[in-house]
Length: 117
Length: 113
Image 1 (cartoon, helix red, strand yellow):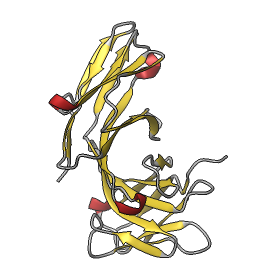
Image 2 (image 1 turned 135 degrees about the vertical axis):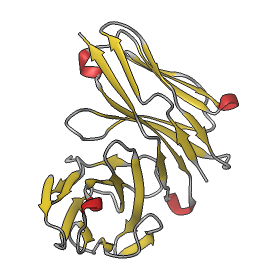
Image 3 (image 1 turned 120 degrees about the vertical axis):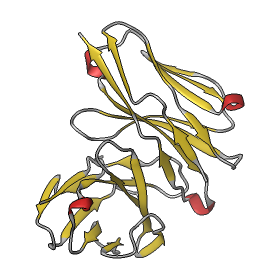
């Protein structure tokens, strides 16, 4: 069975600090996908990134960067120069590529990030 | 291109009543997924549907819960005889065939009094 662990339940940082959100996953499949979603206080889920298991290249998008390491089964998320608008709950998720395009996504419990002005 | 739509956004029911949650997938998406988020928890998979078919309902409670995705109209998640433990946010996601990314709606927050 697949499992996603986000060990940090809550993190507080002061604005402009860098912060890394940890994500460790377990799966028996060799083909899978990893995701990060953001859930701001308004409650909706915002898709941030998708990574497939064959692509270990790190990715940077503005102030966001992701570090995928298969050797440690980790997919960590770093926000550089954090801003108050980054305050949200961040979910890491894992899906296994099923047949016919079907997938069942497993979410971590989320990390609540509070950025203090 | 409108995103995934869910209504109502907030729903209040008394114990024993029925709750009907609607989800309209993004245009061109034929796959719908329902998830439940209990307070202070992550999302848990409930059911996966394609048009007129339930493909996987392994995450859905065996009693009182049902889901459908008819040929025409939105997908419906129906909870009969609601109890306080059903209070949660229910998210719908959709995807086109043969793709790995699910796009989520804004959720329906169900409160059972």
